[in-house]
Length: 425
Image 1 (cartoon, rainbow, N blue to C red):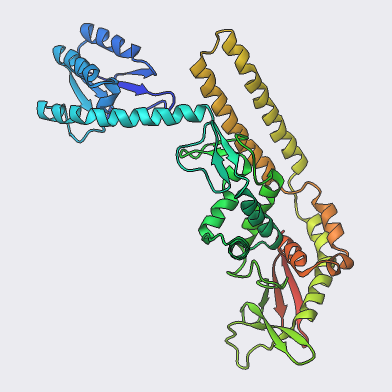
Image 2: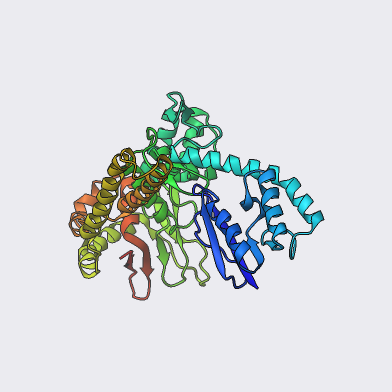
């Protein structure tokens, strides 16, 4: 006796061309959007000895309860047992099970139609259902800039780019605009494709350039780099006013060092002291300005040689390869209307191909934006000039320190303490 399987795939929803049947099957009949192979299956069953037909679920047999019932009746007339792998029954369908499952079909089919509607909207690059994100309003077929709230979002991004602090930017919104958001909401804003002019769907797919962007691509790439860099830092040091905050550790006691202020009537003094030193006596505090001066001297002396000695990827070649791949996909995208006009592609297939090409383009463009600068050695030469560091503000100096340094260790093994830099390279 023969066991065969029937697989129905919906082009807009199903991405897996195969199914796991859990047992050996002699033949698989597959339909893609219609059920022509089901008719072939019934014809073959009339001439061959078939014992069992496997399906993933009962709804694969038809769009309506009547269609499913007709196909079940056709199998029953041929004496063939139907096994539905995803239904809550172990083996062939009993009459009571059949009635219960048929009763649930209308709800399943309504859900399927709803998913199909969302999928068709994705093909047309329409916004997903629901309220528009803060900073936008819903237009006819895309998001439009909300002139009342978009400046608030843009100021949030600008503040984060300047200071690199998520919580600081959240507090800035509340103080300046009275807009209260949580830190988790702020992080979603920073990473959301919506504010970069792209749509993101529940499937995780991104459709690029569907509406006006609040955050330009170059600034978005910089925000991504800042977020990655901040993950390496201790909590609450990303927005600290001093450039060495969160970077300095004591090599002797392995403790991080925090910045302490001592005020007198005439002057304020800054010190770096260990936060949890187990030594007795404890490691003494060091003058902040002296540590800063020595750190600048060390980075100017060590950075060019470290960059030159570190194998760097050929960023230019990688950029050219990605750009060539983008150009190839854009060329294919431009040909699809012609293929549709000539009848080579039908409208639905053309829409599906356009959608897939655009999501692939979004992935490639994201890769291109995340690449490091191609002229890293030239940048290292520039920042190895001491005057460059002295002309920076503390916020600017903090930015550059964290781009190149993993940590600054204080070595107390000699009679006088020394600076030891641990570079990112």
